[in-house]
Length: 497
Ligand code: HEM
Figure (cartoon, rainbow, N blue to C red):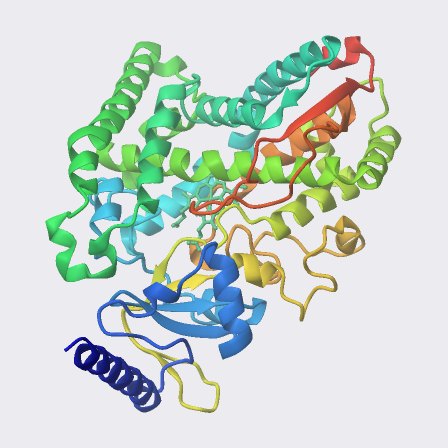
């Protein structure tokens, strides 16, 4: 009896494989691993997914098609493939999947920017981001907030170094990033807002059967949606509602003398033609905290981990700082353009360690032909993941692509601003990160100041491990970055930070 069942299972599995191969051939899909009924290729997936997908690309080519559960995915794994989807076919793939309950709840019913599909409301929000929130004028308005957070960080480091104590940079960066982001948005530090929204985003990694078998999604088998609806989202809404109400009251009290200090002020003062509803303002603020906190914090952590574990690179960076800034004044944000080596370090860290290695899913409503001469077609309603990690390490563009070599950027104009597809940690095209300008300024300022102010070294009994943690959407170093610091400029100059 047992043998009969085993033979039957083998026959069914073989039939499924043959059917999958035949279906793939006749449907002209891009190549990819075998898909089984119901589970697709789910059981063969390995963490971290960006590395797994890069291995699939070695076998099947740069554009891989697979099913995770019953959901079709297309994965772009090289700079050229990224360009195909994010430039040539950017418009067709600019949608977000609208079927998932998780994203619907997180976006306050598609009232936000990050999960909304393109349309007039999404366009308006992107315009507001580009012209009102992340304009040069607004970035200059928020500069004192970053400086005040940097001052606290520098004081804390100095205290530790005086006592001969190691510094936990992860904790320090969490405080700097959360503080400067919240001050930029609300003119207040709001750790509870950051914590609650990030707890919520963390729920996205819990395996949810509904996401892989969409017909079961409504059953909420893991109770994730019930927790989101019942506990987390009402808390987030209440916290952000309070912020909007307080800002509206201040605006009313100030009358004609009202001056915008932060993003909420800007959002409640938009011209009538650009007005957003309160729900949309909250959705946008929630995106900014969800998209801006961990990404920035983990990027600077990687950057410092790379630099501290390579003393020669730190020495070169500090030589540049001595030459351009000297030791008699603190670094300013506008020094960026005069510090090509520090810029190169930041670019190289973002290239090797994109904070969201697979970006956010895109989605196409109509089939798209690859134009590869074989008639290959991406069917409609696929989730597109651009493997930013693999594109950034594309050997067609970089020599020794897995090594940290900032010098590769010197004398080039290659930047992560979405024009050069071999370095796209912020993605590219119309859905490229809306906070790119703020993130780059904030990271650069922190990096240059830390290297200007202190000499950093590894602790012998706690060496730096440049390994990724596994199983999160982002990809922080596997363990906290705990290092030693000693001042390299006088305390009176450190006090200027
Ligand atoms: C190092 C820091 C950051 C990195 C690496 C990063 C990366 C990304 C990536 C890869 C995407 C997805 C793009 C796509 O769908 O193709 C994204 C989207 C987004 N990011 Fe960032 N981000 C960072 C910081 C920030 C900051 C500081 C903010 C705002 C305060 C922000 C706001 C957003 C928003 C609103 C979106 C959604 C844009 C849309 O869907 O139209 N990000 N980011």
